[in-house]
Length: 426
Image (cartoon, rainbow, N blue to C red; front, side, top):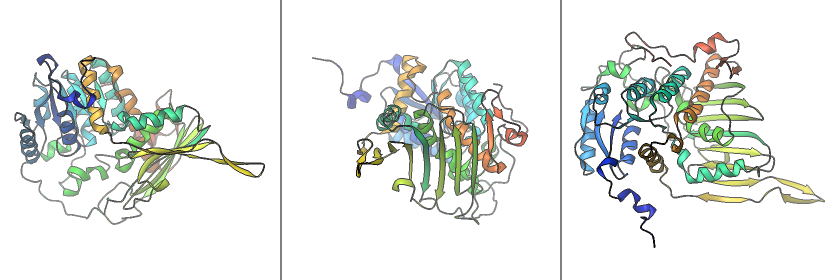
């Protein structure tokens, strides 16, 4: 007879005071709140502080914490004040992408563990700075590429690595997002009451406020993010390269543009393809807005195309589609078909629990998506955008960590902060 609790009851277990984990969130409007809600499902985890430049968000999320039966958290307009709080053990960094580097490095310097949203940074240089900061700190850093914690992804990756697919020549990754409609052009205006817009801009170029660039839609403007290539792309590229044990491409070329909605307000392409060359295989990324008809009838996913068959996996599940051959006039499968394998897992919850477990065990090796591994997708996705912007095939020198003989492309790997903000040292 065992005293162990059933797995489903683990989060309801009584936690001793020494195992209480106090968490703050920096950027609580969208994914930051989803991340915090997930953390609060874990026994012994408390939301003690919220930082957001929008007072309306601070008020709403504070009330949301209370509605969950928790004590009202402290709220801050400046995240640096939150980091001064000695009772905060860990922070969730879920700001727009252009703030990730500064907020994460500041949090590590303040002695906090960090759960940082994807993509980890806006530039390749920032990724390097963040890796160095994590290494110096000795703290746990989990990247919010939560597909890594999905048991069905783990099973699919094991199948890919088993060799059953034969030589894998191509990995397809994609995101077709039918829900995305045109972003209507709007005039500049005053920031909404309660918003510290200058703080929201942070290291980004100084611009007049425009509602299209604020909150969710910041993703479609180059000053703050990298469009679908870095928004959805890092999730799919992360699984693709992790399964293939690959990190840096030999070359990358990309093409795309605003073909679906040429006159809307967004800057990043609504249609794009990028081809990455690695040792022994190519990876194709493609995205499209306004339509859901992606490869294999799926709006998002990864396909590992081998000589014997193709494994297709996405958030819903996975399957194996065998190739056939003809012998003595008879068609036969090269491997056994694997019908669609669905799942009922709450993968984000598994990912946040993994972060908390690693903190409590003080063991970074437990992390499903630590900063070193998690940075690979962000760096590769950034390369895709750089190839798009330069309009030519780029070759990467992995030993020198730069593009070969291409000053323009190298310049696009670097972070350029406006006056008053400084990139931390690596």
